[in-house]
Length: 175
Image (cartoon, rainbow, N blue to C red):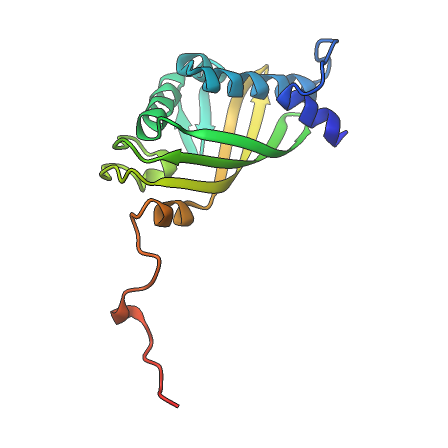
């Protein structure tokens, strides 16, 4: 079943019959969402969300999603995500992705938990793992939660140091 689900998401194997069950339909919606993102059709991506949904714990509208997607692509014009694993059952789809991009713009929204808002572009690249949890109703995204290694991303972008400042370190005794 896992191979079939991956094939549906990536289109690696032709799927001749239209999706007939909820899981297959939701995988097709998510596959289409990714294709629209790769094509730069951010309004098309946003249209796949329900008019009132939850994104990372916040109530959002389709316009909010479109604004966040535009901000993501303005901040990281070369943003790419590769799906490594997909699990789906009923209205729930979970993906593990490797996401990368180069910090070339100034974030204006709460993308990445708001940590990038107003940060001067560093020109540095990041690559992290992210897990996305998606819930669907009537072919629309109604709930999304992402768990990501934002600390590593901020370190890779040079926005926080790799080590603690010396005043935060416990003094070591000389032996």
